[in-house]
Length: 510
Image (cartoon, rainbow, N blue to C red; front, side, top):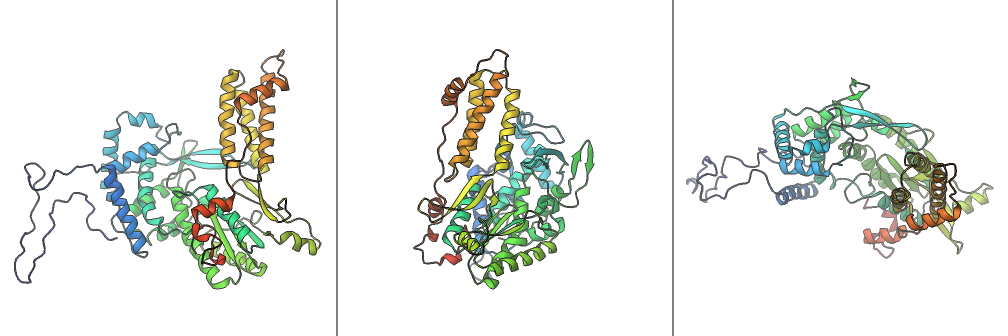
């Protein structure tokens, strides 16, 4: 959608075209003198309403859907005061501050003036991005994951611009891309993968891991990818400011020539744009031109799982993928990228060759297993990853030590929230044993914590059982079977659909 000037309230009234060539127009162009004393034109609001903001973005969305190759030359005017205000309220209230030390509550004290000033600085080019504050969090494997905490105003502007860009890129992204997209969750991705494995002739699984993806993103390539759809130079400059802002660690600002900080509001969208051009479009084209058997694809951010019918095609895809990644300054992790035999025929094929049980693979917190149902048929089983389970229990143990002297009702209410949140994600079919084990270990940790409160404490299993029954939620499966939920979200992929199952790309049209 091509736009002219980006002012939402121009000073020039539209010219009425002449009916006959060679004759003057009925209404010549005239300067608008303002709303005061104008009885013809209605008084214009300087700040559009939320409804007008949504209408503007909806027009962008429709244009992006209708014209797939068109560049948008004027987008920044959609980042108005109303959208910036909405972006502020979208942020977490208790989030850690950036290098400026400004918190959400402090900014709220004079919100309207702050937002109006921020809007003015963004549009006249006076806005400057601050470095991200480096912070490390522990991973399940014991390593440290670096995060970049942006300043509050950087978060606001990033969130507002992401809202605008999503209107375009949500029409471009492919169906098998799930990570950090509106209306798509991790369980949607898991459902698509499970449905693809059980309904298609998947015999081989490629579990691909991109080494340090967020730290390896090439700024030059990313800007070139964005410019395929975005022609507004001011939007490009904003993205460049965030990429080049640097990080502050131990009081020292380090420039960033490559990568996008994890934890930044705009990073997930930028990562999806990068992988959309590097992987998604390429994988779709590869499947169309090189695959003779069935192929399923799912991607959640930088986690990629591809299923193949034929081993030869899986090996060729892996070689081609490595070459593709090298071209764009990325690489596959040699230890975490695996090609394994997996699927409904994997067990019997390996048994015929004298091999053991099929290997398993991890994806989005679950270990996927080629198992058997009670009737003896193939069943994809998903269990909580052991390392993730142990990491969560260690986290609970440390938190209980800090809460050791809290009252029992306070401890019980807090543990109930933790366990309920854990169940909300992990309570999937075939994972009941892991849920029972988790609840049992939490109970034991609580018992040990209460016994440490005093030497004469007589906390018995009978007493802790009563406390657990009163506070902790019982184990029950909260999620439906993957194919059931997938069929609701994607009815066109029902077994009775006209489109062949080979066209399933695990989550959307190929």
